[in-house]
Image (cartoon, rainbow, N blue to C red; front, side):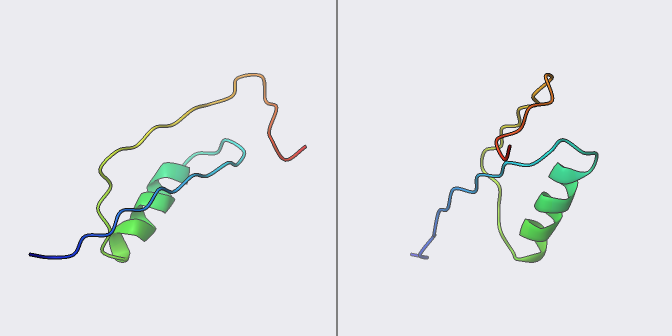
Length: 50
């Protein structure tokens, strides 16, 4: 029986092309498996960083 670790990764950043590609690429290189993914775009342009 293998020991599997599960983590939750939450990101908040300005919208830009290639964010999901870059993050998933890093996770792939680290040998991670993405079991669920959700994205949300804020059409108003407001961000949480102020």
